[in-house]
Image 1: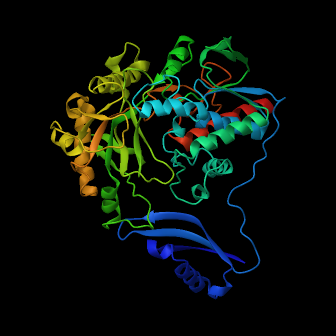
Image 2: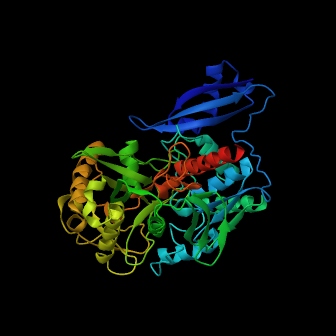
Image 3: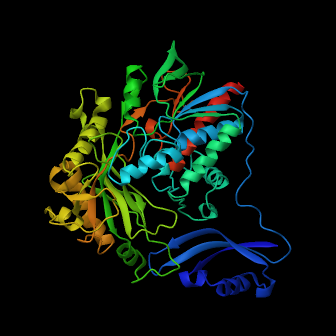
Length: 518
């Protein structure tokens, strides 16, 4: 018989098999030798007082076997099926393509960037501060920004779709078992390229198509109905269904849509900086122990405060992580965070961003829809101007930023292209800098020692979400004025992360399938 219950263990206890067996024996009134096997099916950390693990464990005391945590998927041969064009091979695009295989539609994926294998060289060039390829970088290419931005799998969008199905699909294509168990699952940038390759091979072997280095430059529209699209390389594709899953950094797509009279609107977003601490310091603050030891992962944090009626919060926190350059154009500096599966960097970094509303940047463009985008561009350009050269990023000691002082020097950092001391407190817009300074003081009350000269702030964290929304009908997911066009994911303004983007892409395919069936 399989028995299941929730338990609380201190870290050293959970990794002591004899202690776990004794606990199970006492709980289920089974002799230790009668427990044939056990497994953890849920795990989270509670560090509010003395740090401990909350776990759910199943155990077997008979000849039964555990069922698989993951599901099997029936991908169909779609080589002769009705086609759906998917623009973008990020989480929204690739999971839309996988859902096409599940429901029996043929995905034709159009991606402006390169495959993960070819993308590696361009990422290496950026990390060395040598060159930025505007079509192949940390944002553009197979897997989108998610491939080289950590791979955290947390979403608040549970009411919109099946989160566990997304995790099961990622597990099916190579992610570790832990993503089906941990409360805040994480894949790691080192593992994601292989997963993306496996997804690509499944799409192609099932009869779908993927076209890399193909940048969409024109939608084919006839009497307000989509009929396909044309690409910069001369290729054209025909279909009555186009899923637009281009990501929030594909700014040229917004101008393309505006020129073709696809309805857009401005939207709020968040902007700020990335803060980096020694990981040991964050461990000691969060775990309240000098050394986290071998049984605890690098500690994370989640911070949020209302400052002057605006939210200021941590974003994409990367324990044991690295700060990377996520710019997509020349003469701009944009930073983001990532970590490998082991999270074994000496540093912890997180975006700390300020909530902005459309009224904050209406003066930045004559067309109010593009005001937020132009505001982003200006701040990213200022970050470039305030860097020394190339892809170096402007930075400041956290304590100096809060005190509005120039940093005479900077500590070591994970940012490979290099840092230069810069007065971010001076050149960042006051609506951002002053709220950040107030918020850091509040965060230091929650996490004593958070403000320290060992920490740095690096500019700028500007790509948290899209500043523009591609308007769609909430029921059909279609563009409000172009039938057959399905805007989805982060770029369209309907998601914020790997899982929510993947859910949105799959939902778009479900809506298309409903139309085809009827």
